[in-house]
Image (cartoon, rainbow, N blue to C red; front, side, top):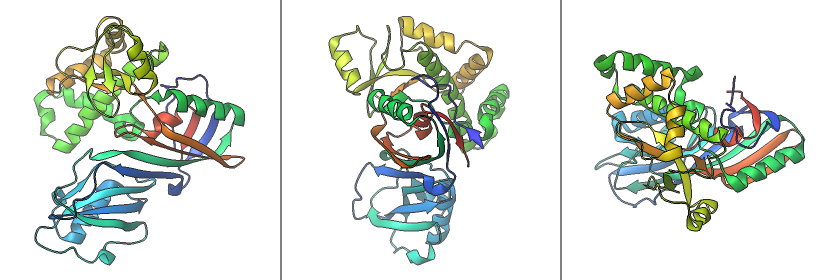
Length: 348
């Protein structure tokens, strides 16, 4: 059992303690599709509800069911095993019909929708995720909890990478450092494992820069030399002088302050923003991670520091059970929302 990290808590002290994922049904995630199926083509697009299974396992089961190689199966995003999730998969079936779905379905796995499509489902091809979470054994004053939730709804939350990004016990950062220390030999590991470790290293640096912005209160307002990110995209602009137009766009969640996804090249931020980012990533471990990412060939990019929990609603199921529902864009984590509430133990 692990605790969701409070390192990026932005609104003050914890207002509750609770448990999450005491059962898979208490953590429901539904992918929001980015497109409609074309209705024709050599790929079968399946919307699947799964319980207690991770995405990779289901992809392998689909390959076995269809009699195809695993690379013929596509999915947009990885979903946790300890949850009930609804997500899309594609299976390439050129020139033939799909096997009977009854041979695929079982307890914990069922097909909700099937349709033909022209292309394989690619990573990131989703509009976001909708979450319905139930917190159990909640302790805390109801008024304070609801006040905190109203703050989250009004201001968004720090867009931290979740603990899933860092592997069991956060060990992937240490593994990334070991890979970097090996130099060129680190490239001999499998492509997928190497990509996972590079991602963990980059995410750790981003979270450290974000924590510094939370500490000085600038994570949701920007600062001198800020680089702004357009909501719902990876497009950035700035730095540029502060203006009423920027203030209005920031309040409307049309733009967000951004932080570094480390790589080669110069930071785009300037002035006070750049100085803060460099100071936050100036310890020995951060410098080793920065150097390793640069030598690995990654380029400087940016990620929004703030994310909106869109449509946030809450309901008390009983005196100690609280249900939350909200949507997040791709690449953002429900744990970033939960971290603003307090010490929530993950029973999975």
